Image 1: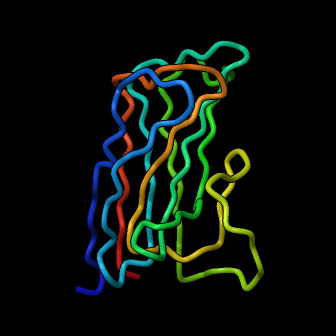
Image 2: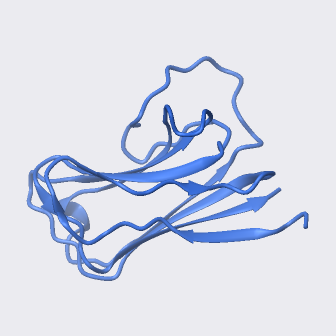
Image 3: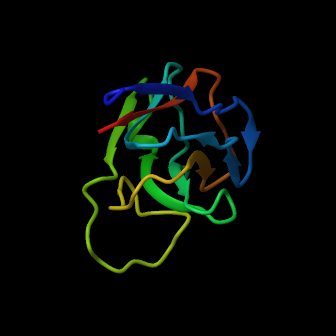
Length: 145
């Protein structure tokens, strides 16, 4: 199936945490080079003036021994009192031919021109202790190009 799609819930749990929350890795079917990350906050987001949250989608090329950041979705208190949905489309078949330093994080709202590996996971990190709201759902859809 050339255009087969697979949608997976990344399992972001509603809970309080102080540094980072990491989801269980999900497998990427062989041949899938496209990914769409969707983070939907159905509950109103409320962050203090000094608090921010960064969601980073990561991939692995060595069966989970090391991870590389693919994209970052950033929320801060300017997003308060809204129920935003953020979406990032990644096309692993249009990579840049440039050297890079492997990293677990990226700048706010940045994407990296890297291939999608065999697994994906999502991290959520607050700058100050915080809570992922019960209405926050993260899914990733992968597809063959």
